[in-house]
Length: 426
Image (cartoon, rainbow, N blue to C red; front, side):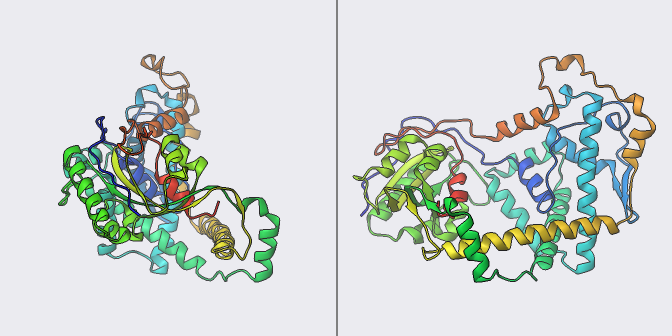
């Protein structure tokens, strides 16, 4: 059953919203295997926290130089205008932390070269293009963000190449792990029964229309074009078109690959990720399974389809659909994580590493001042706080408009959290 609906009831301007900044994208790719840097920094003054020569070697890994230029690029990506708030001491700490990650990355990349897991050029290109598409930016804005992040297309591709190579290496190393035995699955379930509760909630699918201009033939480049396309899709669905097919053909979201399937999300998580009003609408018994709900979320237009609803919590057993496989996957993934960490530790032990930047700090300890620049009196109090500020800047900054059918005001919490929670039967 399809509910009569359209986007004409959207009464407020939906702010363009970028799901993730380019900096975050490339930082994530940069840290596919290794943990990301937690420090925030930018070029400054004083020893390791001072003025630097980009061509200077910061460290060597088995004779391969890591230039300060690479360290500074990562610093610039993380700084995002916070450099004035950092003291030389903080800059030195941030540089050393980032260099440590670069060293680990280089160790693993050299291992990848030996194991033959370097990706093909076409794979790097595909990942680069996917990154551009998922950024939701026009080509002009994408290039602007690249420049702000201190990235060129060449450096971005190199980061992607290394990240994919390390991922391929870890996949190869962990491929030897065998599935757990039935007794192990039973023991895990019996020891964690509280985790296997399907909270009351809904299973959703979605078609997403993005008003922003992402370039590369995007036809919905503003709110007006997005509303028109949304109404076209709604009419298509009302005419009996298959939702999953339409999602695959017309949705502007990665979930289109699964026919728009977002999986299962609890009422509590739905309230946080979408809004309490949307959650109340979807949980209302009057809103029937099969109906659609158009609503703006995070500056994009979503057409949700209610696929399933559970009105009470349900204890799940190993015989419940998907639970045995879920336990199997959790055990395998835990073993893969332990194996990959152990492999990396061995690789680090075997490598010949010389950290020249750390050596400079040891040789010049009194050149590092903890005092902040005068201009930073009201700035954040530490580099982690600055990092949190940056993360906050990438969070949603606009509230959605009122929908004609749900009369639901959506907030800007990421609906992608629904995706991460959806696949777990909780």
